[in-house]
Amino acid sequence: MLRCPKCGSREIYPVAGGYTGWIYRCKKCGYQGALVLEYDEEEPESGDRRQ
Image (cartoon, rainbow, N blue to C red; front, side, top):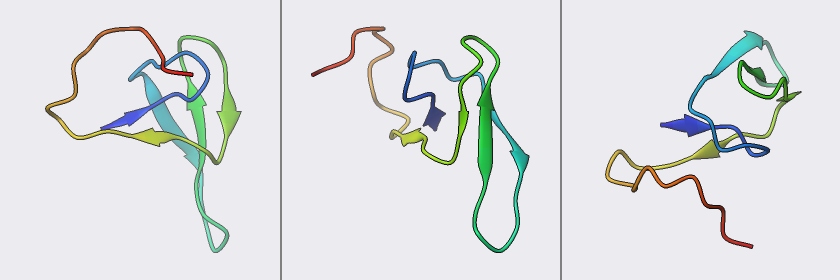
Protein backbone atom coordinates (compact mmCIF):
# COMPACT_ATOMS: atom_id res chain seq x y z
CA MET A 1 0.00 0.00 0.00
CA LEU A 2 1.45 3.35 -1.03
CA ARG A 3 1.07 6.51 1.04
CA CYS A 4 1.99 10.14 0.57
CA PRO A 5 5.16 11.12 2.49
CA LYS A 6 3.77 14.60 3.19
CA CYS A 7 0.25 13.93 4.51
CA GLY A 8 0.05 10.11 4.81
CA SER A 9 -2.92 9.81 2.46
CA ARG A 10 -3.52 6.63 0.46
CA GLU A 11 -4.88 8.73 -2.42
CA ILE A 12 -1.57 8.76 -4.29
CA TYR A 13 -1.20 7.65 -7.89
CA PRO A 14 1.48 7.53 -10.59
CA VAL A 15 1.41 10.32 -13.18
CA ALA A 16 4.58 9.56 -15.13
CA GLY A 17 7.08 6.76 -15.41
CA GLY A 18 9.88 5.43 -17.49
CA TYR A 19 13.51 4.49 -17.25
CA THR A 20 14.17 6.64 -14.17
CA GLY A 21 11.16 5.44 -12.16
CA TRP A 22 7.71 6.73 -11.29
CA ILE A 23 6.51 10.20 -10.34
CA TYR A 24 3.52 10.18 -7.99
CA ARG A 25 0.86 12.78 -7.15
CA CYS A 26 -1.29 12.97 -4.03
CA LYS A 27 -4.94 13.93 -4.53
CA LYS A 28 -5.26 15.17 -0.95
CA CYS A 29 -2.33 17.59 -0.51
CA GLY A 30 -0.96 17.97 -4.05
CA TYR A 31 2.45 16.42 -3.33
CA GLN A 32 4.30 15.42 -6.48
CA GLY A 33 7.53 13.45 -6.48
CA ALA A 34 9.28 10.11 -6.76
CA LEU A 35 9.36 9.37 -3.02
CA VAL A 36 6.37 7.49 -1.57
CA LEU A 37 5.92 5.44 1.58
CA GLU A 38 5.07 1.76 1.26
CA TYR A 39 3.24 -0.02 4.09
CA ASP A 40 1.99 -3.54 4.65
CA GLU A 41 -1.78 -4.02 4.53
CA GLU A 42 -1.83 -4.72 8.30
CA GLU A 43 -0.60 -1.22 9.24
CA PRO A 44 -3.04 0.71 11.44
CA GLU A 45 -4.87 3.49 9.68
CA SER A 46 -4.06 6.16 12.25
CA GLY A 47 -3.17 9.51 10.78
CA ASP A 48 -0.26 10.21 13.11
CA ARG A 49 3.26 10.24 11.70
CA ARG A 50 6.27 9.26 13.78
CA GLN A 51 9.13 11.72 13.81
